[in-house]
Amino acid sequence: MNRQDKILIKLTILLAFSLGMVFTNASYGAMRDDQENPNINQKDEQGRKQGKWVFLGKDQPEKGYPADGKISEGPFKDDRKNGRWYMYYNDGVTVKTEGEYIDNRPNGAFIKYHPNGKVKEEGTFNSRNYTNDLKRFNEEGTLVYSSSFDDAGNEEGAVKYFYDNGQVEFEYEAKDGKPTGTATRYWPNGDVKEKLTFNSDGSLKETSGEIAMVKPKVEVKEVGKVADKLPPKPVIKDPKFKPNAYNKVYNDNLELWMEGDFKDGRLFDGRLYIYDSDGLLLKVEVYKKGKYFSDGQI
Image 1 (cartoon, rainbow, N blue to C red):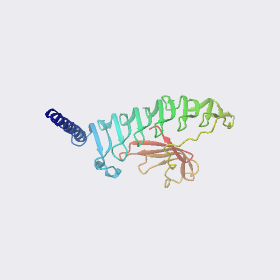
Image 2 (image 1 turned 90 degrees about the vertical axis):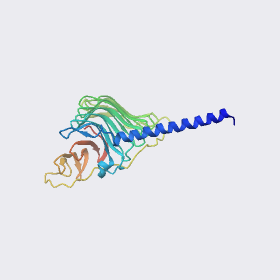
Image 3 (image 1 turned 120 degrees about the vertical axis):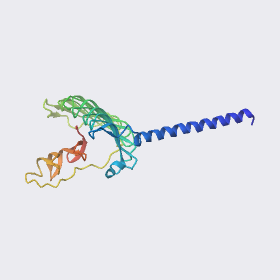
Image 4 (image 1 turned 30 degrees about the horizontal axis):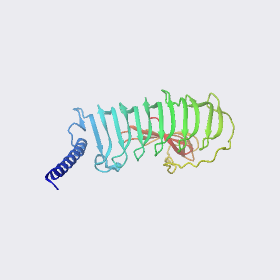
């Protein structure tokens, strides 16, 4: 090995070491920004949160996150969330939801993620309702639902549901959140399965019944399916509660907890409201036929 080759090897080793130091310092800087930066987690003279805040597992151990794992982060203004916020899964690393907040409420563009990092849902909130385009995806990134919403949070225009193989499963036109005109169901192979017609009020006018497949059958692998989630069964002390009728149920803090039709004392078709420890509404879950159906508008 000549002298020139030795010098080249030394320079290569030195460069690799220098790059390693750069990445190490960058990682440390990010951690420092989250844990030690004097410009975050600040309150004003009145005790109100201001600017960027980062909540770690050690700050709220009851949530079961790693001590140094992130629960959420984003900006406050006068003790209320304003700006883009990030919520994390229980590993404290993987982003679960990111979205815009105005005055402590989701308002603006948002993205929800599957645990594997793939986009789960993408849309816009406005005044606590979905608005404009909304898309949902399975854990492999395949589109499974698309629609648009009006300012009141109702489906409007073309609505499509898809199989996990990307084939359209059901499509119709919506007005004020109700199907109208003709609608079509499809088999996983693309053949028409059923033709339906709806009245202007959303009620079913007529149906073709099930239409037999023509092309070869296609098997669809269900992606990311989990056991059906059931709503909690409340312990009711109110004598006015009817186990098989429409009810409104309040929690111990007198906040609306459940509303809708009940069957055998359990929510069957309705909404479940979830609050944080400060009484702020975090999430609305929609249940249909006794099982979890989707997240609703806040």
